[in-house]
Amino acid sequence: MEIKYSFIIPTRNEQDYLKGCMDSIKNQTVKSHEIIVVDGLSQDGTVAAAKREGARIIYEKRKGPSVARNAGARAARGRVLVFTDADVRFPPDFLERLGDIQGGCMFDLRFWDAGFAGNAILASWNVVLRVFMAGGMVATNGSCLAFDRRTFEKIGGFRDDLLTNEDHDIAIRAAKAQGFFFCPLKVLTSARRIRRTGILGYIGVHFTNTKNYMVHGASNPDYWDHGK
Image 1 (cartoon, one colour):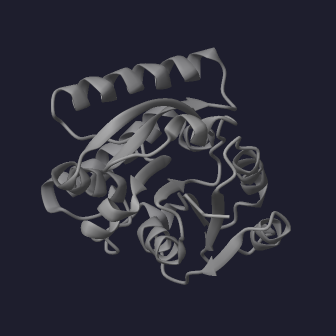
Image 2: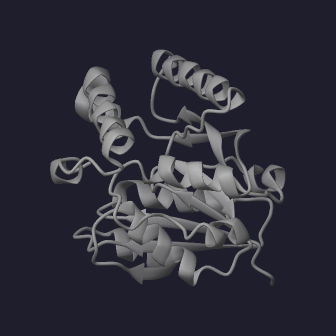
Image 3: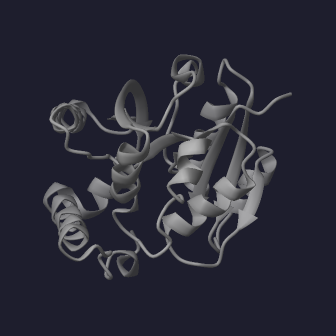
């Protein structure tokens, strides 16, 4: 069977979330896909869970999502590359509705493990993102991005030196090369990061990350040291 879509999932100690993500991929109405798990030295049952679900597994010792995603892309066979966190859940018709894309896109995120208030905040943020994009300002929401392979390879993939804001950086380059858009497909993610830091802490961390990228073109060096 031809592989049209490659789901690439960076992991590090994600045994509590990975199966749910992979189950939602395996339940897609479109079956021409593969799952690639790029594991960064997990110490829990992440790799065993990936093996049980039939994923292709790549091991990556270097730190950060960029190197993991690039490693997965090099091994991928699909024409469309879907980069997703391990806590994301896809509706069964996600690929059916996504179809072919040119350039890159982000998605309309919602929480699968938060109540009305949390999802109202996230829905409002998605409105802000759409306004930014309509005004020509490239923005992302990180947990799930997709690119056609030709665009991804043309712009050189993710920057390996970025530990944070790698999603924003690649979106800017994709927009210049081929286009980057807001796809209205709803994709579910976890609110675990907000529960860990609180909403103000979460906003503060991402403000610091964005400031470092916009001012210095660099990552927030403390982000991964804090176990994010």
